[in-house]
View 1 (cartoon, rainbow, N blue to C red):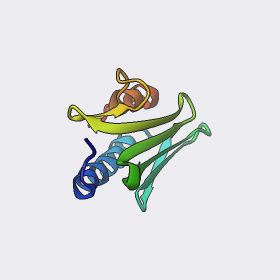
View 2: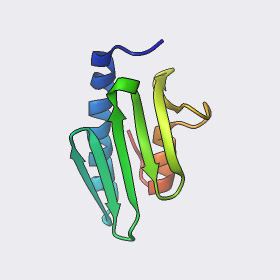
View 3: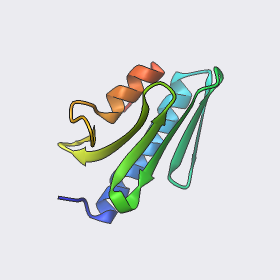
Length: 102
């Protein structure tokens, strides 16, 4: 069952804000810029992450320089991969970026 748009936005917007803050606080070599529902994380080493909300699909999309492209849906109180239900957004990002995430 798909989320209502308002519920999706209420989950996705604060998530992106918390991620931006946690990454900025946790890494001296990262610049996290949130604009228009798109979080771009640029690492001094040259890698760039793009995390954005896809409201029509009710998904969070991730483009990672380490693990590639992923789509996540809200299920069981977590953002879970649409391809691999064992993969969740926050643990994946936390492991790749080396910072604890909310």
